[in-house]
Image (cartoon, rainbow, N blue to C red; front, side, top):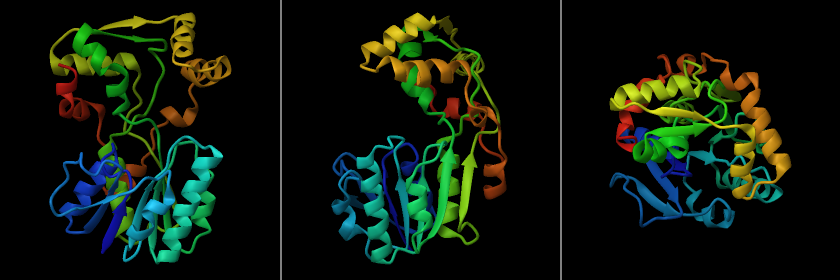
Length: 274
């Protein structure tokens, strides 16, 4: 069995490559930065860019399964690129496709479902690793975080659990025509998470609550327009969709063991906060 993993050096893809390699599955690991990887020697590194589907063409032949990493950007350009990849995979004889999409879904799902391949769709909510992007530098250098909605809940999921579900779907039967909504085992807010990080690194961390005006100013400085900020930042922060904080048993049902909690993720990543 040979699996082509797109986004092979990313948050989820790296775990998938490691798990497949550990199972003795032949892996083609697709990356744009082929000279900047640290993957096992047994893994075949291949160069490609999801924004340019033609770069994947030669890598799809003699492949049994494809892990497709889609992006939350649902522009026509991204859709057409993903559509072309799905079409090329089917034409090349790929038997299974597992696609990672945003929790709200992605139009590419219909293209995948209408292909001749066995398919599985993964829809995880927020990644635990987002904490690194949002807080790590501030905690490490300044000992505090700034956030506007400290009581906003999210059932964040460990990236390794997403990867484990993907590997199950790629290598075992019984996952065809399944859409898996994936969450962690608990809904936490920034106050809860900050407390756990503080306990692990044994250092107090201050939470500074931002005002709505401060949030708007910050995001405007990043180049976002007011309509985007009002809906995706302010409204979603104040009133997150129920699906974001509703804990689901999907991971345990698929893997046969509970989803990982936030605490072990913090232990694994403590060096980013200390």
